[in-house]
Amino acid sequence: MNLFDGGKDPNPGRVRGLSAEKGITVPLVPVDMGAMGHRSQDVTARNPLQRLPVLELDDGTILTESIAICRYFEELYPEPALFGVTALEKALVEMWQRRVELNLLMCVAHAFRHLHPAMKGWEAPQIAEWGEANKPKALEFLALLDKELASREFIAGDSCPVADLTGLIAVDFMKPARITVPDELGN
Image (tube, rainbow, N blue to C red):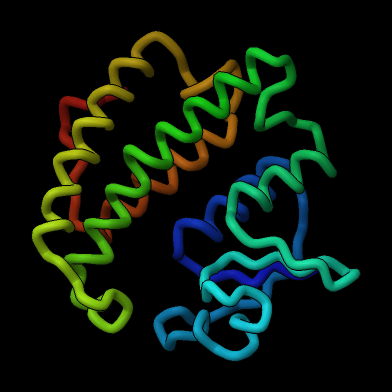
């Protein structure tokens, strides 16, 4: 099994984070996204969408999409459970995972992709207004999340579920997206 990894890219970061939480060692195949390695024939043959991560299993099966890969690892290595155990836990983790992904990570990604000068060759066209429009959306969701975290340590459940990993990746990604976490959001 090999994980085609894009370094600081958020989506491979989620897979690496989940792997680390579970103590799973997966051989990494580094892909230099700055040099457009994700658009190489090698990656395109595995994922025609030219996105990372890509998990290639020993039998040649290809899995793409970070959460699909994380779910695969969850099934192979159920402890610690990062997608919940009971029906309610699983539903809560899924609910918060989607909320964090759509309302925080995607807004930060849109700001980054449409505003950062290094992304000019990636987005056609870059739409600065769309990038700017997503910055306050990310901050609004952070404020909601801050209120939620005032009463609990983790986003969903009593341990670090995948929703927390997505949130951590999103907050880390705010730096290159040039979005600052307001000081008053202490949770």
